[in-house]
Length: 384
Image 1 (cartoon, rainbow, N blue to C red):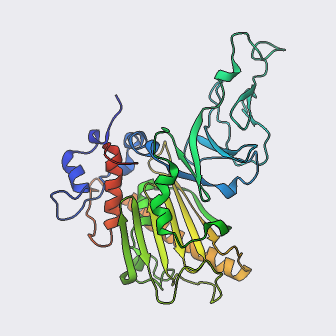
Image 2: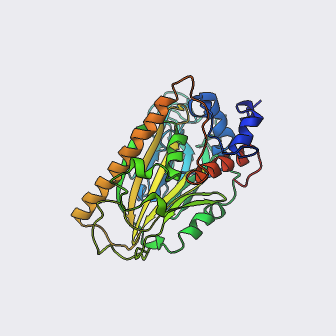
Image 3: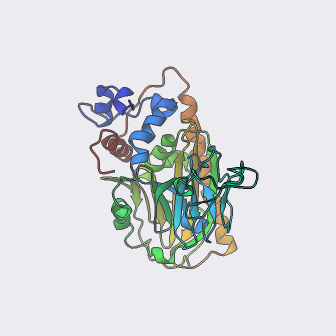
């Protein structure tokens, strides 16, 4: 029988995470970050039942472009008609991994073990020598039964989403709250500028996500990189399945027009940092920048996750060399600063006294909301 969250957390712990009967909302207990069994339950009761962001459409620009999903047993491919598909990353013969690294303009998907090959639409095309030294066809072997196993896949704007169990609400409904928040962004002009990655990161994916949705750490951790965004100017977003924060600075608005004032040496403009639970995360920086954050759990290792940021312009304009250098430097510094404290949390988990803590009712309200969103789905009460 499959395990549920109630097999790992006591009723009193769940109540504390939901803020019931307590002065402050508690954080998840240590095992939620360190237990492989908990990680498996987390996928079965939550992550596989909703939409998760796994890639970017611009990274698969041509038919036949393919890439594995970091930390997960799936791969993505753009087919001949231009649609992006997701499949389980295992050959139907003996289960060998099919796609281990990004590749471009492939005509077929070929298993490295016995050269079984599949079309970009997942159909089995050949099984060399299956029926002997000269034959691949056997009278009892139906190729149609052994195509790749698909995973429900969709693209919202530029972001590739999958739903493993296939039963989540339509992707458009899932993403609607985030689309409403960024209604002033012209996504049709989205232009990828650069990507910053830390692959893999030696922390549980929820440590990274919690850090991503709260601004409490900003004045202590990002002293220089976020010098123009004081904590007192942040406003918490905790609205249903949307969590994060926003900063509205005087004379800094999102216009989708190119930056003409200067190239940022630190963050000092109106911004919105928001995640649609569990991991569809976008950040806007006025007047014309969008940054996504992909945080992916490692399905087998609770002490590891995969994280990357991609920078875009929404004005259709590119960046000059000087501006690009500054933005890359800024994003790399922010990520390094975050990684340092996230690794500190992971090391602190080694202590036998590492117990669940408490959340600031002001600055960590988004983390508390994130927990309640998680438990809603795990306990079969949420909309996913």
